[in-house]
Amino acid sequence: MTCIILSILTYYIGVDPISPHFVEVTKSAGIAFTHTNGADGAYHLPETLGAGGAFFDYDNDDNLDLFLVNSGSIHSTIANTPYKNVLYRNNGDGTFTDVTEQSNLDTLSGYNHGVVAADYDNDSDQDLYITSLGANHLYRNNGDGTFTDTTELSGIGSTLWSSSATFFDYDLDGYLDLYVVNYVYYRLDQTYQPCIEFGYQDYCNLRYYEGAPDQLYRNNGDGTFTDVTKTAGINDQGGPFQGKGLGVIASDLNNDGFTDLYVANDGTPNYLFYNNGDGTFTEIAAWVGCAYSSEGLAQAGMGVDAGDYNGDGLMDIFVTNFSEETNNLYRNNGDGTFTDTIYEVNLGDPTYLPVGFGTGFFDYDNDSDLDIFVANGHVTEHIHHRSDLLTYGQRNQLFQNDGLGKFVQMSSELEKGFLTEEEISRGSIFADYDNDGDVDLLVTQLNQPAKLYRNQTSNQEKSNNWLQIKVVGVRNNRNGFGARMTLQMGNLSITKETRSSSGYLSSHDPRVTFGIGQYQKIESLTIYWPSGTVQRLENISVNQQITVVEETQQ
Image 1 (cartoon, helix red, strand yellow):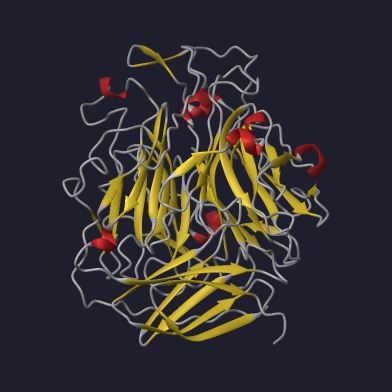
Image 2 (cartoon, helix red, strand yellow):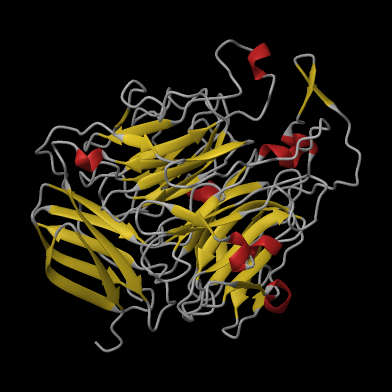
């Protein structure tokens, strides 16, 4: 596939910034989910990770349903514990109904962390892959409201301690392959020496554990997968200075038509696996400037997302890290290299003290540029004994893109309950669950209830226009993951990608929502499919949802 040349975004600066307006609607929406980490006083490291969730349309009614992952008892592998994972069906009226039992997902056992939703078998139904401590699970959607555990049949039931995963088509054969991020080697039957922090027993530092190697599975197209980790050149061997992965993003980072992989590692250098286009990858993060911080340090990477924050048609990378490290915003320089611009864009100081986990680029105000949300929460219960500035519970953060390449932290005074409460947040899941054209947010928490925030920013006096796109692959995978879209309106050009997962342990709205400010008409929408097909639509009305089916003839 030839390289894609994309237009440069010229920012629309015609209206004043719109303040965020998010309202917590968890209870009124019928969501009653509380995460449990099963802490028993022994301070097992898995208790710190928390869990994520997925917005996906399991019943094909064009309303996004919700799957929330629970962990449960650290020693339990018994199904139907009180700490079960939950599937909520979207009723289409702003409310959800618990359908876990009817769906057969109540049989899922184990100590679970993450989930990715995707149609791995191209039957037009969204399936689920759940990552866990001990054994991962693949659940095939039967198309009748139920799921079947196909882990053994598929061959992707990794028994390492897995955190995140992503489906993507690395070899462009039309089937979604799977990359599984593994954390460290940890055994519940092994006795670990207690760790003392500030005079109290607490969770041990990560340096005491060996990193576990990641895995790449090729989809064979018949419901099974083959482990191609070694033959594909995924050279993560684990050990003290490798592995320890928590987040992953699949994105075409060099615009060559092949999807690359970026892995956020905890305490070890991050990975960038460039897709060579021949079935192999080359890890080059250190060479191109996105393995370390701007100070040259390996940081504690948690969550990760990719998006074009500065409008140059290139995917940049945002990574959340531990306290006293700052997060990273790696600007894509367009020549194969990256530069950490975290201080340049005014995000250094605000992200220095919090421990960031879930994150995502999203245009909360539909003004055409990407804002950033970060879910924060510490892992050390007694951290307040070290400093009055450090707390176990922390405030989440929303950073508004000013349209000039910098970010402004939104004041917590704007929305009480949204950015004011000190919580132990982990996952952040982005989706337009109510189909009103703006992106809503669900935040998962450690040992606390999940919270759903409805985005009502567009209901204010100064609202912006939008377009929401669902793509359906024909030659490509049915989800169309890996497709790149460009909207053109006069001098304004916006580029986004479709993908299965991002952030931390979570899967998001598979549709792509474009904010377009005050523009009243979209001149063109160009879709660059992974197969090489280029599809163009013209003169599109704003404020609507459209479905684009891949053309098979050019």
